[in-house]
Image (cartoon, rainbow, N blue to C red):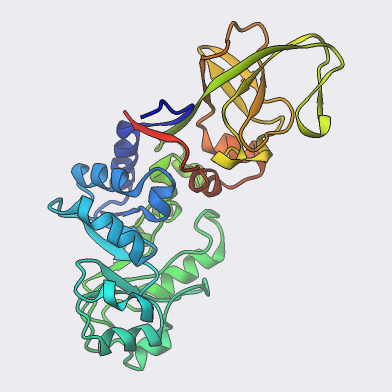
Amino acid sequence: MTDLPHRLHLSTDALVDNWRALSRRSGAASCGAAVKADGYGLGAAAVAVRLAAAGCRDVFVATWAEAAALLPALAGTGARVAVLHGVRAGDLSLAVGSPARPVLSSAAQVARWRAAGGGACDVMVDTGMNRLGVSAEEIGAGLLDGLSIDTLMSHLACADEPGHPLNAAQRARFAALAGRTAARRLSLANSAGIALGADYHFDLTRPGIALYGGVPTPALADAVRPVATIAAEVLQRRRVRAGETVGYNATWRAPADTNVVIANLGYADGYYRAFSDRGRARWGDDVLPVVGRVSMDLVALDAGASAVDEGDWLRFDPDLPAMAAATGTSQYELLTGLGRRFERRWE
């Protein structure tokens, strides 16, 4: 295999430590893991297998295609898969008989699952997000009667804003459903929801972004650390004279003679144009700021007095909150946008 010119260095220790920290904060509740969107861009199978080995027993994907790709890797681990988008008509051939459970979220899905003779399922109830979920009124009218429900769940809309009144309202609406269905477990909290405290944990928590080093709320800042670090090879070192410009649209002009290196990385890889004049990388202890526009496959950096040269490898800032603040891009987008051209190296 050709040695690829850009990589994702992925830390097993950081991933597992993050999950364990979130599990501890979940108190008596079990701690699951959202591995949808290909493990938030890091590789769902690689993530799920590592978390299963650490003791995680509930993983969540978005679609049945994601479930089908993940199930073989989890065989024999004891981890179970739930599919958050429920079961469409086109999903039945994959869903019926699968060890994965659908998370049913509408009366039509409930009817479809019953008609197909489906077995155990989860159910999403809407408590105020107005996205997916059956209503409390539908539950009261008997919509779920007779279903074999493993987990009744809901999703917090504003958990990353601890003082938002919708958090307490959603928790109260969800708690009022306890005992009104045959569900074995209740689940409400995502990553930020875990930090809201024990009243939000119920039986199962479902962290996502924090597993991968994202910090959705300051209360988790000391609990998690980065999992993914971008590395890219330098393709060229050049001397840019004072007054000359670098990159598309000539947005950066050298204030003095400047050493500039060009690295094999760009927005096609998920290193977005928002990093233009805002991103940074390291070569050893030297910090190299991005200069000019990030292009599709290339990025320019001010090498300063560093001796970095063609063939050397730069490591880009892995601090998701800092990158999000610098670029105005959400931590979720920064992770899930990581491209398929990267070689993913677990360490």
